Structures are given as structure tokens and as C-alpha cells.
Image 1 (cartoon, rainbow, N blue to C red):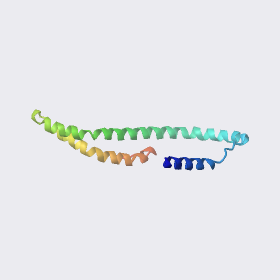
Image 2 (image 1 turned 120 degrees about the horizontal axis):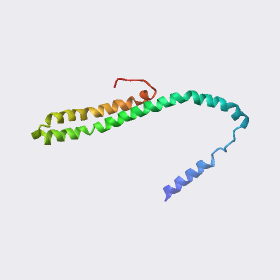
Image 3 (image 1 turned 90 degrees about the vertical axis):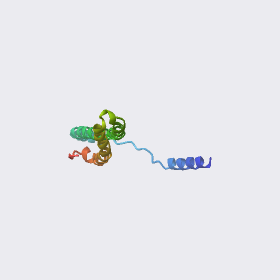
Image 4 (image 1 turned 180 degrees about the vertical axis):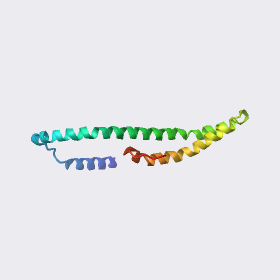
Amino acid sequence: MIRGLKILLISLSLLCFIPPAKAADPVSMAVLAPAALRAAQAATPLVARIIKNTATGVFQIGKDTFQILYLPYGLGKMSIGYPFGGFRSGVVYTIKGCIAPCKLVVHTVLLPLKIIGLETNF
């Protein structure tokens, strides 16, 4: 009860010091609007490229996340599939599953570089 009262008092005290909103001057808005439109038109291809690079990077991270599941699949295939000739493919899946967390960390760290358009070979 006292904790809730403290939170209420702190939030009310912070709300008391909000500066009043001031309207923008219509003349300056009319003068700056054409410049803002030109800037937006110039930035459109850059934003589209950033969105594309971000989507490919996030897709790559998601793919690495699902490749981590190869580890238990490979271990199960090695143990249960051994009598049926599944040992070799189980080893391959286990190795892929062990490498996947490292790839996930590398791709997550390199995501900001990929967003700005720097291509890496990872």
C-alpha cells in the first residue's frame, strides 16, 4: 500500500513539471515544408535499402536460431538411428547444431553493420 502511494506521488510530481505545449508558427511551417519534402524524397531509397538489409539480417538470425535444434535432433538420430544406418547423418546434424550458436552470436553482432550496408563474408 505504501509502495503504491509512493509511486503515485512520484508520478504526480513528475506530471506537475510538464512544460506547456506551444504551437508552431504557420509561416515557418510553410517555409520549411518544401525542404522537408525534398529531404524525404532523397531519403526514400536509403530507407528502403535499410529495411531490406535489416530483413535479410533478421532472417539470417532466425535461421541460425532454428539450426540450434539440429543438436538434439542429431544426438537422437545418432542414438536411435544407429541400428538403421543413421549414425553418420546424426553426426552431421550434431556438428551443425554445435556450430549454430556461434553463427548466431556472429550474425547478431554483425547486424548493425549489415543494416548500414556493410557486406561481410559470414
